[in-house]
Image 1 (cartoon, rainbow, N blue to C red):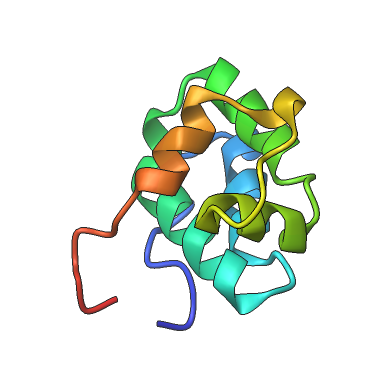
Image 2: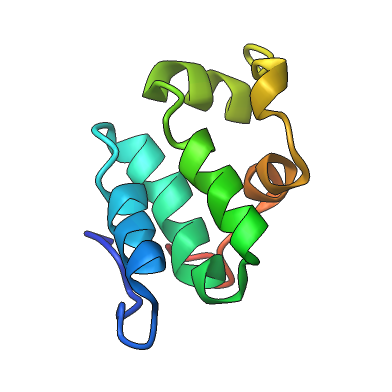
Length: 96
């Protein structure tokens, strides 16, 4: 997979920017984790969840990746139900 499989059509500008940012993190591992999650969930996130995701993606890639893999705890100010959803997320197509 080389990038998003979801069109940004039908999304508001805030969600369009967030979808792009999730797929352009700087490290491929984080692109795949956050990008796939955003592809699947961005349209249904509440405004509060969008805000949480916007703050979460400000965490540097190495720290966020370590928290997602369980190697390091996530800073308490970023802990949320949304982070837990991202951590548990698995793409529907197992071939991805």
